[in-house]
Length: 241
Image (spheres, helix red, strand yellow):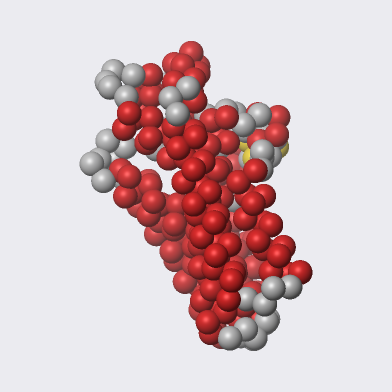
């Protein structure tokens, strides 16, 4: 999160000042590196080589995905593909790896480990889509960051892509993406997206991923733990922060 906030130039995280707004950039990077080192140490202490490989692989995937996002052009013809590749690398891969590592540490069968990884991936996709929706529709007091933070950075999220697909130029969102980012223009763009049906379309897509995550659990024993994971998929869709 420290690195993510620095890369995105975010000034708030859960209502608190981000570290790079208080410390020099170099010290902020090193703080993120230090925490990553601590996490790596904890993983290594498990003495499970396959878990270490999954952990290392997801770090590479997330970093590569973020680099691709930073270098991609907002108006590129493959922007839909870039969006899905981006959220899979940035979020879904982390959820998938976390679920897979849990299965490995629990001694699950290979088929169950694969099911958990699928569960995590689909849950992560749903989570990120809902996160992108909340960025435009959520309560700033609950989110702990300004409304439309992604749009303010010129980022293409699923609601914005749906809006652009249905709208003709010129429109408020295209103006923001082109660099017109005064507050009035940003608020007009947020209103345009929210009143276009793009939010509802995005949530429908999130529900599809959440349902797929639940279907992946069918191979697991029907116990309290599995039911909790099933409920987690429902919470992901209904959450407000």
